[in-house]
Length: 168
Image (cartoon, rainbow, N blue to C red; front, side, top):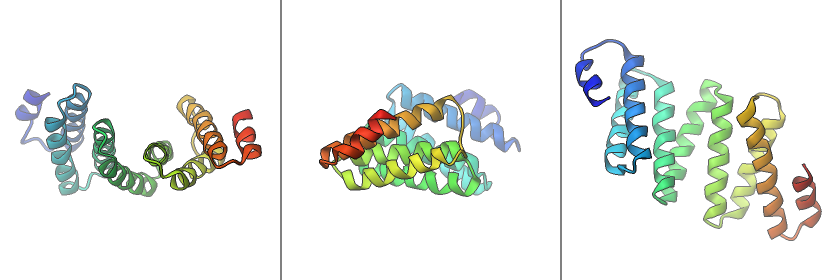
């Protein structure tokens, strides 16, 4: 991928450049080469801004959110997931918006901000139940949001609401 980028650095094929930078950054992240991943995601952010490619800008921000979640830098992860959510919402990418909202909820829950987590999980569940997003992964998110909300209601002592979500 690095060689492909070098060979095509002067091309006008913005989709190819954006996609290749994204795949390269993700491969670095998945191989735990976090320094290279951050650099490549940041290059993708700059490139996407320069060519007004919001799709790859979303992917770069979401990728940085994933990376900082992997490295347990939760404040940075939240920041980038919020940026990704803003773009996915503007682009009408419902599935991606739900994933961002769920990630924001999971990090909030994991860091002890249970009230904020409940807001995010409730928002994701409402979005899912509106029927705007569909498909297998959305069914998994639907189940996950009910489980997360059930657990949060249990921790708040609201056992009736917890049971309702867990029954779903």
